[in-house]
Length: 205
Image (cartoon, rainbow, N blue to C red):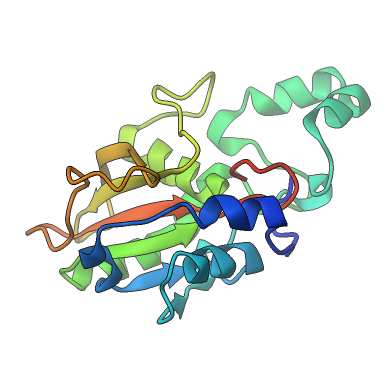
């Protein structure tokens, strides 16, 4: 669980992000990026130099669990961990943050985006994207998500003026430069989220 541990992308991570691209029109849109190194590097490797660092996009805090692996926690905590996982959105690691708290933290940022009346790109983290996705579809984070968040993908959401969310499109490939990739500047504000890349595992975190 990497969480807020501020580690740079590994060489493998940098190589993978180097294969990502968006239609040129998305590079004109404003980009908001988590302050963590791996997110900042992701945006710059993708070719965007003008960035706005947004602290509210910082990854979910795993508190005392950061740096640990799930099997290790299961061995240490036993049934207590399962009871905590059964809380879904309210799973709260010691000295950490629950997904519901992440959703509450993001609300002022979402409202700010909606007021701009334009599309935007957000480079964030898996915990952030999962919290946004859960809010958009009303998922309580119990069991598997209705739609898996795939690697090498962006996700498009629409935001109301009150900061409420709805899914526009999920799992838009960043690898194939598809001409069918949605373009920015729709009448209702929307934003595309992209994950950072984990320096340790080569997977989203």
